[in-house]
Amino acid sequence: MKQKRYFLSESELPKQWYNLQADMPKKPQPMLSAKTKEPITVDELAKLISREAASQELNMTDRWIDIPEPVMEMYRYYRSTPLVRAYGLEDALGTPAHIYFKNESVSPVGSHKLNSALPQAYYCKQEGATNITTETGAGQWGTALSYASKVFGLECAVYQVKISYNQKPYRRSVMQAFGAQVTPSPSMSTRAGKDILTLYPNHQGSLGTAISEAVELALTTPNCKYALGSVMGHVSLHQTIIGLEAELQMQKAGEYPDVVIGCFGGGSNFSGIAFPFMRHNILDGKKTRFVAAEPESCPKLTRGKFCYDYGDESGYTPLMPMFSLGHKFCPPNIHAGGLRYHGAGVIISQLLKDGLMEAVDMSQLKTFEAGLLFAKTEGIIPAPESCHAIAAAIDEANRCKENGESKVILFNLSGHGLMDMTAYDQYLSGSLTNYSISDEDINKNIEQIK
Image (cartoon, rainbow, N blue to C red; front, side, top):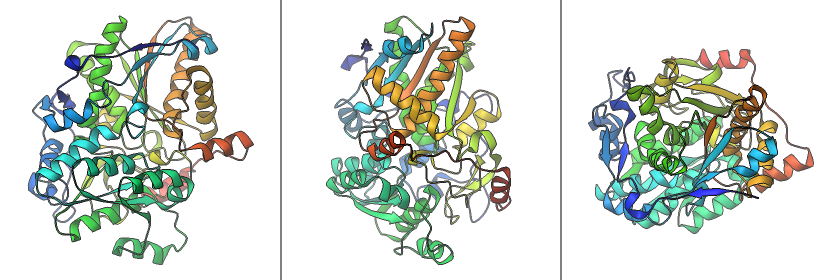
């Protein structure tokens, strides 16, 4: 097994996040207040999330945002993460392509999610919050926020999508080990959960339902703020630490990516790896392609509708201009729980609409096949979510082989799969299946968007 790794010294670590909104040729349409249908303000958004996060969310002018020193101090525990030349995977594919991956699985919680959990928890603490609440799918985000809450002295409550709560018990245990209260969603602990279970007693949950419960808890609990791990612009901002490091590390490797790939649920890790490179397409005329790889069972980018929709099932969040399958959409019970979300982030949706990025969808079995090849050649068992990016990178590398092209491919390994082994057990035993959604089902859910 042959690899080459590139790191940054502490003095080389980026000290600012990059705000792509400042450089976008077309700014995203505004989010709208669910009550007034007018553009959301910082004051309104700050009732739910920290005021600093709300300010970052709506900031379309400042290209660079300083990383607070207490957050930088925690980043230094695990950053820089390695950029790896995947010689083993290249050899197995027989491709002339050069394949690199940014290994975010080395963080204390095993994924990229900590990059945003730390600043969000810090801002909440600075503003006087004592409690923080969130949702999680597969559990990477819930784990990250549980850890970050403990670092900054906050109590954390996590609503985990019920199917993932049952499929992935060890992530639940990790959250509890960090002191979080974990509740399967939908639950009987909130009005939103009770309403959903009244209509659908056997509902297995979705990120939309879990968001509804977490938002309701935040709005009805004193000194409590909501934090979220994807979709929103301030989350994408925090995650740009990934791509900013990768940019410097690619310079050390003496190469520049022709294609940048990330798996896609709401947009956090894709934007993290893509946005810093995308600025060079916008400002400097570079021609890098950006590919978001989503599950075919939840194809909001490839088959969704661009419209104003809620970020949660009960309609508590602002209305967001997004590619969506409808906020009532309940995706199949695939193991890539972090990608089971009905909509795409506002910034991502605008970029896709403007042709600045691409999207592909992947079958579940294809992604696990790619993940196992990656494990055998690179020595890392990837999270089911990350397998989508690997599968897309393999497709690109195989096209290079067919066409005799030597392109540079960069993808984000968003997390490891060591707590997802039940999914691999099912794949290896032949009991894992593909899920696809009919046009009829998609249209039925989209028609419910008001």
